[in-house]
Image (cartoon, rainbow, N blue to C red; front, side, top):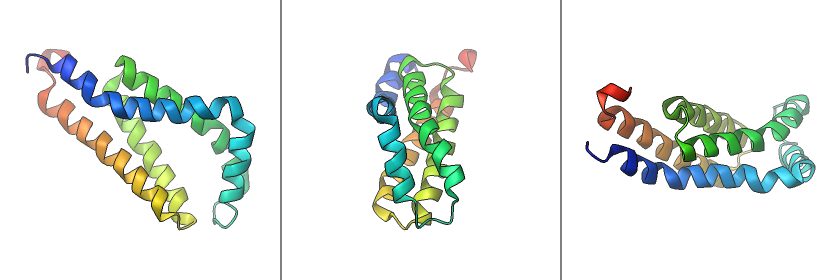
Length: 128
């Protein structure tokens, strides 16, 4: 594909901005976000000693995945990392029966999966 780099940049741009934005807006209010997450996960079977550190790490991971997708750094691995993150978030949302959050997480997962498919199908062989 002649314009792979340009096309792939614009295809990954929306998910990159979404993930970057999630992390970016949460970082300045990390403690508030953490408290919200701990409170929302109270009914979960997941122990709070796991939720607290995750709530502090999540915005950083979201920001880094978004930034990596934006600049095209280790794209293949970043896409798989994003899929792992979405799976973890889906597990957490399932544990508290937050089905509307799962819909958004599944949409992100499908988008990331579509990017993996596009990457594997159209990436020029010399750049794998």
